[in-house]
Length: 568
Ligand SMILES: *Cc1c(COP(=O)(O)O)cnc(C)c1O
Ligand SMILES: [Zn+2]
Image (cartoon, rainbow, N blue to C red; front, side, top):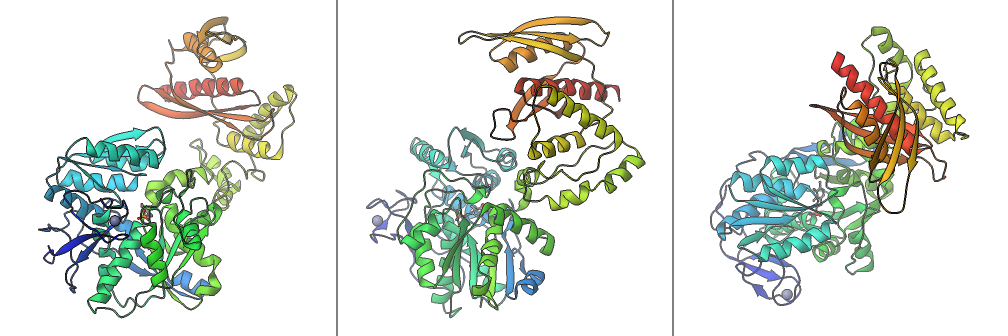
């Protein structure tokens, strides 16, 4: 590790004012714009804005630089990837967090706080935890659980806010002022860490790339990589800086739009499966615009479908499983294949797919549970389901089940469902048929329902509780009517059923979700309950044009599953 340099100035990129790092490392105190670190002399070695630099305790090796041989062959270009997903928390942000946390310690902060869509929280939490400084992370309520889990295990205090990233940012800034806290984030010192990407790349071989593709959210990473290259050039290490390609999801593209309009654009709402780059107000827009302009760069967007396709392609062709944001380079490259033919391109693969397994679950068919018999397994392999599962990628699960062959028991079960639904006077649409088949296919036909719901009746008023009367057949064959109340119809019905069943199968409803399959008012509804019996948590589904009936089905099925698990 080289000696850090103390000779630097925090300069505003708009008004050039010199700022004091003890007063701000976020916005210029003169004009509110963003800052950059100017070193007083150029050096061959990387310089950090720290008095003393400890070696990175969590990382010892460079991330892999790999040629993408198959994709190069396929698309007639010379393609490379730098696997930033190999960083300690599975994301490039560790490069910046390493420096930010040391800066916080140097400035004598009592704690670190930051707002994040998930990855930065995990990353800062990891370094804060190692260096034993408390860490507060502000995250939007929709942050994927796998990302939050990392912050949890690293002992951060998690502040989950009802609202989006922007709301978290505003609150966290206020919070930072309420104590001796270091406000971390996409600010000036983070870039000084993230620029190590360029130095590392330089050591890995010639950096004669024509283009470097970077997935962009706040723009901090692209700006940092560009700064690293500029420093290398100023020090005489390289003569040319590659052209930068800023890429974003079409559904969250303020930076790309801004580059074309030559002014900063702020979006109130952004919505993309590439949550790591879902940033409506890109902090480092001006630095990105400068990098694109100075390097004769480009900017592109990709649709959600193109992103999904490229996630799969990178995994299947090159064995690299990334999170959706990192698929945008490949997707945009393919969309503009003519521009890049024969060119040497580098894709910056910023984060690992293991943190986004919910995307895979959502956009592929889930596997059915099979009874433990060889013939059932054989039947399953021949049913066409596994083939379809492989081909189903990118389509919403449950929507491509039309051609699956079911065994006799499942066919019978399917007929039962269809006849129950027809009795209500409903004709199934194609999409509904597929969804129903998928649900039946995933069902255990040997389930014995311990109770049967024969009928129910609800009394609802505008004000006050809902009353439910549910007619049940109990395991001993006895038919009874259970009366109870709840805050809503589902609550009332389930409470009435549970009043009779809790005694022999105590089940807790942890959560429920209702999915409506078509825009029609008579649409088939799929109800999914997450249920818990002692330590055993599982899901159960029901389907009907009637929401309440779908929930009842799911619950009764849940009783059967819990009962069976108990017996086994
Ligand atoms: C944060 C993040 C980005 C975007 O980086 P910015 O510096 O915000 O532009 C891209 N990919 C992943 C996986 C990230 O976590
Ligand atoms: Zn300024």
